[in-house]
Amino acid sequence: MPAPARLAFALVLALAPLLGACTPIVWTRTTINQPMKPADFAFISPGQTTWREVTDRLGAPNVIDPGPGGLIARYFSYDSAYFDADLGYGLNYVNPILAQLPHSLDTGGNGIGGDILTVVVNHAGIVTLVSFSKGDKTARFDVLPTEH
Amino acid sequence: MRWKFGKLSRAAVIGAALALAGCAASRADLNPPLPADALTAIKVGQTTEAQVMTLLGQPELIKGVDGQLLFHYYHYTLKHGTVLLFSRINIASDDIYIFFDKQGIVQNVIAGNRTQNVKFQFWPFGS
Image (spheres, rainbow over the protein chains, first blue to last red):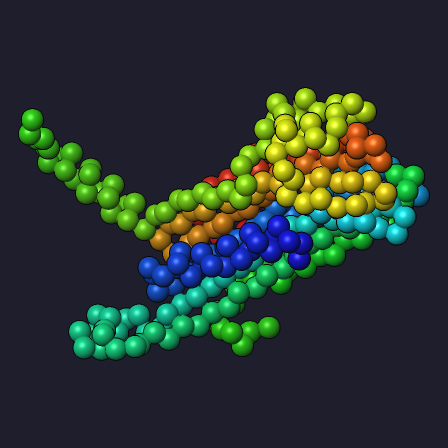
């Protein structure tokens, strides 16, 4: 994961338990950038499309790195689905003594998926390779940690 | 002055307080927003590295790409909404890339603005 996204995700993951701390059940969805569809970049034809055409249509990429005799640009989006249920929450209302003892029984899961469009551009500014890695299906709300 | 509430007003205040009790909205930013007017002042073939730094400040990242120096500026916005059990956090970035030739003159500027489309939402299901 590129460095800026890593930092943003670290912030979100740090916040997530705080957001859900007040209720016994919580569904939290986190997205970074809007997901891309194959139709969005269908115009890119390796060997023909220029780097300028790519940036004119798709905007600035999230990351630009040096490539073999050119550059590598990445556009990414991430999706995360977090579910948590505290099955012991009801004991708060059963007995005041029980409420003071540790009684949380959490279950749930966090699925994170990412889509990454990679565009390789040569020294002449022509796209030589396009790759789309689709992983957003990994982001789903799991009730039990054993699901999958 | 003493506040006087009618029964209806009191019920409205209590009702609003209960309705909003499980709600939250927050926003966070990583780096300040990138100034659009400064970007228009950058001219390809004319503006120097030093002038770019004066206009936009120090870049977050500096790289060497394809024999060119590359400045990368970015700004992230996070918008979060919670209603009762449901939360949604949307994040997007604005990125600016400025390429310089070997003489330190701007050769290409690529700018994107994704944060303008970030919404406050709370419903976590669907797209």
